[in-house]
Amino acid sequence: MVRLKNILVGIFVSTIFSSTLSAGGGKCTTTPISEVVPITSSVEYYVSLGTSISGVRRFCDCAEKKILKDVTYGGLVIVGVKFNKYISVEARWTNVLLEKDFSTTKHYGLILKPTYQINSKLTAYATLGYGQSDIEGAGINNYDTLSEKGFTFGGGVDYSIGNHLSVWADWENLMYDVSVFKTNVNLVSVGITYHF
Image 1 (cartoon, rainbow, N blue to C red):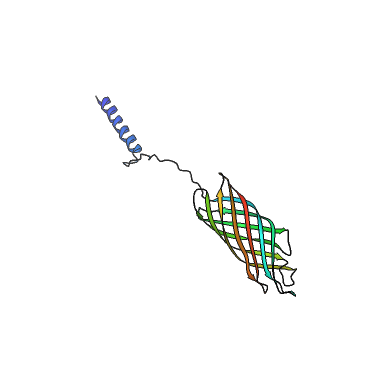
Image 2: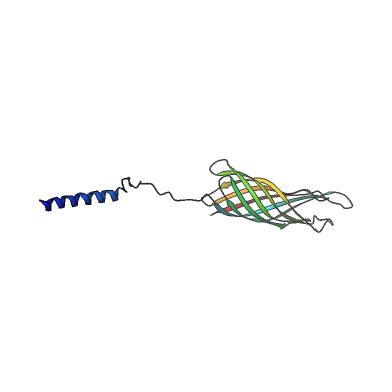
């Protein structure tokens, strides 16, 4: 009888002890079941290649005192970071040197690019930047180089043609009434972008 009593007490104590451990000292320790959601970043990197047309307009301090205009062709490279669907930052390098009459255009700078999604394929954007422009043939002596650091502005559109590709076209003003010759420089560019 004593032996049976000892066995029953042992079972009772071990049951209470194991129940207490599994219940976390009286607290419910049921592990909630939750879905593991992977952390994804909305940051996107991209590179673009394009072709540009530079339009240069300036006053000529020459015998005829006239307005000079030149249209020149070249290319550009863009490296960009898209932080979300509203804002991107780009580094641009442009070299426009073909078919010149009197000028060539070189420009490099950083662009802040606010964007607006028109539909699933088409995006409109503005370009607000700062950089350096070197316009050969637009300097003080008509043939030397006008170098100017300053703000740029413009806008364009981008159209998606696949998961990683898009095509775009934009306009950018590099100079507006700069120097005594009131030099104006505008770029019109088209290109293709690869999104990583």
